[in-house]
Image (cartoon, rainbow, N blue to C red; front, side, top):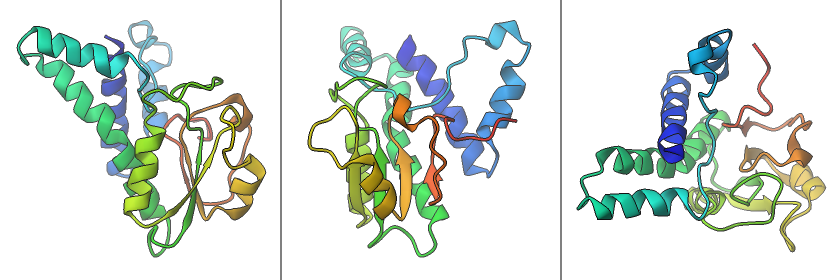
Length: 185
C-alpha cells in the first residue's frame, strides 16, 4: 500500500514538474483544509528493503498480474532518472563535466541504512550523464563532508532529507523532490 501511495505522489510530482508547474503549490491547494487528502504523501525516493521487495512478492504470488504494483515500481524506480533530467534542464550546458552533489545516500532520513536506497541509482544516472558525483551523507562513514560538497558542487540533488539539510539554502541549481527547500505557497 505504501509503495502505491508513494507512486501516486511521485507520478503527480513528475507530471506537474514536467509541465513547468510547481507541484508543491498544487499539493498545498489539494491538501489545505481538505480532510480526505490529509494522508496524501509527499513525493520522494521511495525505497528501502521492503517496499519494492514486498510489491514484487505480491506480483509473483498472483502470477505477475499485479498491474498496480508493477506500475508503482515503474514510477518509483523512474524518479531518479526524472530528477537527473530535471537538474540537467537547470544547468546551462548540461551535466557533462559538472560536479553534482547528492545530499543524502540512505534510504530514509536520519539513519545510516543504505539498503535499496535510490540515491545510488541517482548516482548512476548522473554518471551516465558524465557528471562527477559528490556523495555526501552525515550518517555514512567515508562520504564527502557536507561543507566540501557544497563548496565544490555546480549543482545539487537532495537524495535524502536528513535534518542536517533542512535549513540549507543552496546557491547552485538544485532539485528537491521532497519539498524541503521549496518556498511555501
